[in-house]
Length: 168
Image (cartoon, rainbow, N blue to C red; front, side, top):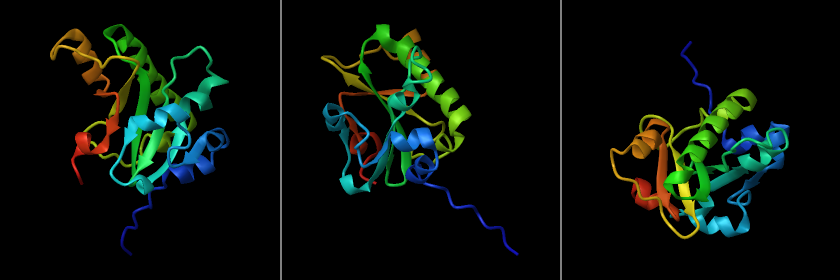
């Protein structure tokens, strides 16, 4: 008998089996706040499987934590998205958000962290700039090294799939 590889469940399937996440998941970009949906640009919108408002899901039990905003599924890959003011003074806050979401999901629903990723290497956490400016950091600076060490990728005001990954 040959080995059968277990089928990876989708983000939507995982969320539908988890009471807390089910409430905060939606098809497409429905879990994102209305004004934040414009921050996501993909070539084929129907390939957005679902989105989950992680911040809202964790808020009741962890009100004083720095919580990560969203995870979304695009074309079978999971992407972690944070929409937050971009300045060097906010780097520690965003790092805390990454640490929080990793621990929270490890405790609550670790399968989400193991969903397929488009990125090579470690899973990336994408920081979209809210407000008037983009994050400008000198390469090799302590701030840049901190972001790299936590796999945080500032992407400007829009998470643009084609700009990040190319057309495929």
